Image (cartoon, rainbow, N blue to C red; front, top):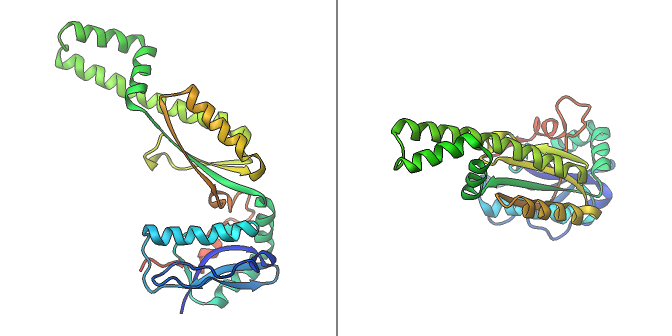
Length: 260
């Protein structure tokens, strides 16, 4: 049977893993594979595995439990290795790098911030801040709505202004919150959010980071901010990697995703 991999941690921390259930229906018991100073948190892999809420939460629950005992390098959901021996071989091959990342991420957590605009509030701001838009909107109003040409022109002007505002707000959020973080990772702009940022935060200063987010909510009520954390440092496993492949990519070269 193939091996489902949740994450990598110090061998000493892995001794704290007991009586944990992982993915699958019924859930597979969580096991530990040790190799030198490292350990992989694993279970038997289900024959079929879909990214359903139950399975995603099971993966997250295992990582959270391991993280309570010490730092863990999370492996992405649905990563499956052919055998236990393949897993321990990767641990042995990448030992120096994995130990360096565990040391670098010790005592940290990831906080993800997603931001969007409150449509009504940001539209008011855009109109108030742009004399040309405001003048054309007023002219159209006085003309009973304006001509089709003027309506189209106004819509295009507003769309351009909103796009610029999204870019400016995304830059502002990263600029204002970065000082509280050890590192920042920005998701691609195609995620459907004006900003999707992950921050590496020292667990002892997480309160200050969350306070800074609350202050931004108060100062910029046109922004809708959603914070998720603390999380295992998914976005920072490969930070500063000397290996071109990176930790996750190197591991998953042997652990192909199991999509059922």
